[in-house]
Image (cartoon, rainbow, N blue to C red; front, side, top):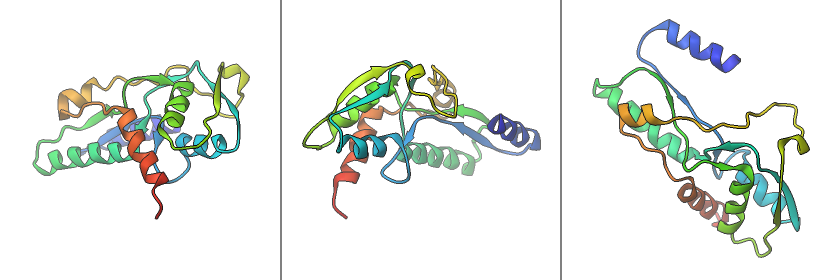
Length: 164
């Protein structure tokens, strides 16, 4: 509700603007699902992961790339204001994402994944079963396609596994 209220206020204020809605953001920095899975997966033989929620995992570096392309269009005087969706593709479940994380990682021992319903993993925040966003508008207006999250995942895991 607070995000929607903020979007409405930005739109009502007028002037050039872009609101970029995204989901399931991951990177080598901060707290996110990829880093959590790698941390807990290193210590456990099996993990229970929600399988009835779907979304498009989105690498933070891909969001930055999209925002830079949009900013360039505004700088050229060809930007279009509005709300746009941008997520990785193809859609998957959290359990699918977890399996891909472990398959991509170099963990010596990969935990097995037990697929569970949302009802078996209660959290304070309610999560939608379908977080898949329609990214047609950003493609049509800005020629920005949905990146394959698996490629982004490979880059992020490589960054995490490369010694500083």
